[in-house]
Every structure is written in C-alpha cells, then in structure tokens.
View: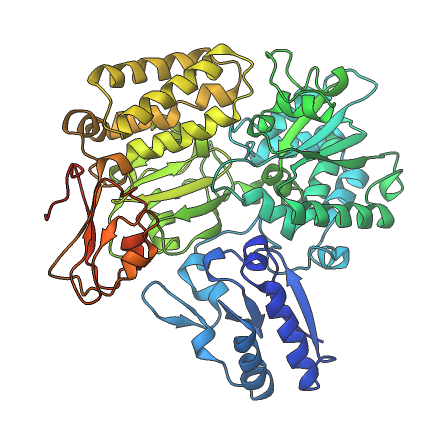
Amino acid sequence: MKEIRVCAGGACVASGELAVKGALVKALKDKGLLNEYKIVETGCMGMCSRGPFMVVDDVVYAQLNQRAVNEIVEKHLVGGQIVEKYLMKTPEGKTVERAFKEHSFYKNQVKIVTRNLGIINPKSIDDYLEKDGYKALEKVLKEMRPEEVIEEIKKSGLRGRGGAGFPTGLKWEFAAKQKSDMKYMVCNADEGDPGAFMDRAVLEGDPHAVLEGMAIAAYAIGAKKGFIYVRAEYPMAIERLRVAIKQAKERGFLGEKIFGTDFSFDIEIRIGAGAFVCGEETALMASIMGERGQPRVRPPYPVQKGLWGKPTVINNVETLANIAWIIRNGWQEFRKYGTEKSPGTKVFALAGKVKNTGLVEVPLGITLRELIFDIGGGVPNGKKLKAVQTGGPSGGVIPASKIDTPIDYESLTALGTIMGSGGVIVLDEDDCMVDVAKFFLEFTVNESCGKCTPCREGTRTMYEILDRITKGEGTMEDIETLEELATVVKETSLCGLGQTAPNPVLTTLRYFKDEYIAHVKEKICPAKKCRDLISYVIDPDKCTGCTACKIVCPTNAIEGELNKVHIIHQDPCIRCGSCMDVCRFDAIYKVTPPLKVDAKV
C-alpha cells in the first residue's frame, strides 16, 4: 500500500488535524482508493506554524483544511497533478514540493533525536521496529557489559540536554559504582519552560526511543525499575507513552528477562501537577515518592541517595532519545556533529518573532544567526532583530550584536544565559527588555516553592521593582537595588530555579540598561510596549470614520460619528490595543510618554 503521512503532533492536532484526517478518509472512500493507501498519523513534522501537514509521494502539503484535502485527492491522487497552492513556501515566496529536503527550515537540520518524527506512527511498535527499534537494546544485552555501555556514552561526549549539561556517561558511572540492592532510572519529562515543547514533541512522536534509552541506561547502572515523570498538561504524550509501554511489555522489551537475558526492567508513568520546580531533580524525586515537590540540599546527589534513599539516575527526554542512536551508530558518528566540548545535536523550540517557528534539531556550535535567519527565515514584517531569549525563565537575553555566537554550553554561559532545555524566543524592535524581564520574573515568582528565603522573597521583590519601573514609577536607586538583589538571589538560593531566576534581569541590565534608564528618567518605553507609558492616538489625516475602533473599545473611550474623524479619550482608555488591531487604515498609533489629556499629536 502507498503511504499518506498526516502530522498528528500537538500543534497540528490543535490546528485541525482530526478534521483533515476525517476528510482524507472520506475522500479516499468516495474515490474507491481507501484500500490502496495507508494513512499514517505521525508525530511533529517540525514547522508548527504551517500545519496541518500531509505528505503524498514525498510531496509536502501544508496549512490544510477539509476543502484542500478534497482537492488534493481529486487532482494529485486521482489525476497525478501536484496542487501547487497547498505546497510549502520559502520566506522568499518560492513553492517547494519536497520541503523536507528542499526547504531551508529542514535541509539545514541534522536528525538524531527527531529521526523518526514525522515518519512513523508513534502508536505502532512495528513502525519503530522497522526503523531498527530496540536493536540497540538487544546489542547491549547480548554483546556488551554494563561498563562497556557506559564507556561508549562517555566517549560520545553526550551531555545532559535538560539544561545543566552534565556529562551523561559520567553520571551513569557514578551510579553504577554505588552498592545497593535497588537502583532507579528516571526520565524527567516535566518540561515547564514557557515556549518550550521539545520533550513533548519527542514523547508524542517517538515514545519507544525514550523507553529504549531508559532500558539501556538501566542496564548500564544496574537499575530494575524506571519512572517517567511527565506533567499533566501533556495528555497526548501520556496517552502515547501508555500505549508504547504496553506494546513494549507485550513484545518482551520491558519486563522480566528481556531478550532472554537475566536483565529485567519495568517502567511506570508518574503524572505531575505542573509545578515548574518539579523539573529540579530533587523536587521531582520528592513528588514521585508522594511528598511535596520541594528541592533539598545536595550532596548527597541522586546517584548516591535518590528515590527512597537508593541510587537514582535522572535524565531528560532528549538525552535518552540519543542513547539508542549512539549505541547503533557508535560514539565516533555522534562526535562528527557539534563541537569538542559540546558534541552532537540539540533540539530547539524556535518561537517568537521569526517567520518559521517550530521544532528544530541542529548540530551544537551552529550560530544564533544561522538558527534565526537560515533556518528560521528571519524576522517578519520588515522588523529588526533586537534580541534572542534562551533557556526559558532560567535563561537570559542575548542582544542582536551577539548573534554570531556559537550555540554551545560554554559560549552561552559566557553571555550570561544558558542552553536550558532548548527554548529559543526571538524578539524584535517592538519588544521591551524591561517587560521581558518582568514577564519571566512573574513566572518564577508564581512557580517558586517558597522553601528558601532568597528565592521566595528575593524574586518577589525583584518583580515589584520591575513592575514599578514599567509603570514609570521607578528610580535610579531601584535599578541599583535590582542588580544587587539579583546577584544575591543567584548566589544564595537553594536550587537551580532560584539560582538562575535572576538571569533575565541580569542580562537585560547588562545589554539593555539604557532602556531601564529611559523608563526611570524619561518615563518612556522606547519599544512602546509598557501600557502605563504609552497612549493610543488617532491620526485625523488617516481616519475614515469607519467606527470599527469605536465598536471594539471595551471602555467606550473612543468618540466619533460615522464617516467623521474619531478621537480617543485618554482617561477611560485602558491601553488594550484592540482599536489598533482592527483599524484597516493604519490610523491608530502609539506614543510615549503617555498623554495626560486628550490631544492631537
């Protein structure tokens, strides 16, 4: 049977994949073709902004709806004619048929972790086996001793992809040397960074790769029991994991005497309630054990004393998805990508002010410029790149002047940010750096567990200072206090959440201090973003009196009659921006500092 692949990743499902698949089944049935084609619902195909996707004869169709599907079946499947208007386009507007090979978003990627995403059905273990699934596990159980497996991973140079970048093989070696009657292997799937969806995409699109990686790790360290800690906000990932675990047990890849050897290993799913702090390994373990998700002092480290006091290794989803590939292909192949100190690839969630958003896997060492412009297609709407935010709430802001920096652990740390789990948010000239710092601090304040004073009180105080500054109520002393407090919180907090929480503040102060000063001294927001420091004004030369702005205004702040120039009264205006969003004549614009009275500008 011929294959038609339909993306069933989270973003495509949200944008109508189920309706697309239903229309496809109906259209094939109506044309008498249902028995000639196998419909494969795959994981994420990468460019989330262009879904839903469908791949026919290697031709990639994007942004589909039911009408588009009917036309593709009629013209392509029946008539043999490619339907050009549904093909993917480059940022320059050129259509490409085989986008996965020809489009700049895809052709510059290297697929290791995401090797099966968009290709196999994540609910089918047979699809995974056709892609050499579980052969790496068979190899280590039948041909390699645990210490040889550890040595292979050490030679590969694989570093933990959860953020800290600790050498994976070294962590396994520490755990393997511990003497204990019980050891545990844990997959950290508690991905909580705003804008990050790498682990979710892997779990939804290739869950068996994670299970195989866990089993190999368990064999290497001597663990018999495994847990996957995944947040409740990932229902599709949880469902597909459950299916995968059931299938793996039925086929003998999990359970007792795997591949006829003495090695036995089983996995359970534990669902977290969505606390960001539970991504920290000691808080995660507490949650698994039914305790309150709060971090504890280290040492002892989890490899020494983890779950129920036993040696425990915790790796994140992406780290584990690398393991089987390394075992099958060898550490030398893995080291062909990346840099000497940061080998291999990294999966990023590319989001924000960039033309091509989505899931990207590239060799470490690639520059931010290559990621944003070559793969991401650049900043849309003719705007200028202003900064790049990496690492989520624990990361920092990198100015446009530094975009030729290689993406590796050491280079990002030198800039004051971190790799994190892989979130990359592109910011343009319309973004206020003080507001960006405030956004991430608000998230951290809400997610702090409250156990240690520096994080509990320090982050809240920093947020309050940022709030005053964005309202035009800050002082120069506030800026000094903010910088001093950020340093104290960074140096004295108990866990990684508190230690990295000040990064957005410190990096924006480092690279964009002039914006802070403008907010304080001039009471203006240079980016015209902060609500309390702007006003919306109607240009009388452009206003046609269409009344669209007046209709949507929630506070009746706009006055005017049909076909006559309107005016925005400043006192009742809440600066929501609804009027500017609906204006078709570009007659409404923002000014800073805010107008104190109704006036024409």
